[in-house]
Length: 306
Image 1 (tube, rainbow, N blue to C red):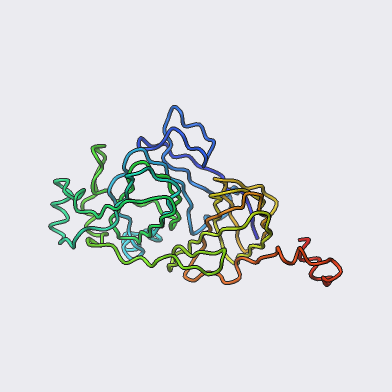
Image 2: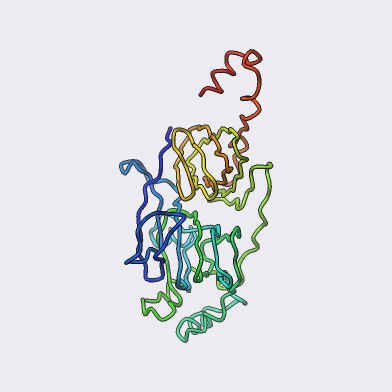
């Protein structure tokens, strides 16, 4: 049973940003930060199945692909890398790429990598704050400039590049051809509302990704029977014994915590292993706290106090 504030690992990238506010107070003024990896505080604990990141872009990332589980295991890796992005902020004109405009043969894909025309064959689309993008393993994709996003993913760092926008890093033609679904992206289901507070953004075999919006000065219970990553994206409050505000991340595993929402409300992203949403994840305790004490049974009083 675990509840802990996440630790932060910094990945400095030439395409990153010098100002990470309000998501982080880390000083990036002299060396741009591209990624913040949210990790368990207990370094001796087993790695979770999922990894939560924040990405900050001032330039486009490479056009790339990650392996799916089947291909990853065929080359000796434990799993592939399916991911999802929640757009935290995006300047006008910001865009991402997902999939290709049409199906390519292996020969056509190789030629497009070699002559750089792959940059015109990916499906570019505009993005704005609040958008959600699901990226199954094997899907060719790219993240453009001027975006801040939260990413939940299978724990893997295997990336094969097709195009690098002039940065002259190695391309991985053979691996790309073997790993890619070289065609349009799969259909993404729209977000699904479970309750007034819970919005399921993505539900897949690898993870469920939700946005939870909690009213000001309300009280809630959060209960998981598996690992879960929580990221505060608006407002502030207390989660368990920890004060939490924008950019704070918390890891839970097979545990429960009270949520005491502050005066400006609070919105969180939460991700946990799939395939289905946990029905009992969130309980509204506000009404129970307003009942007269003498109307509560002894067991109810104990539950409210804890």
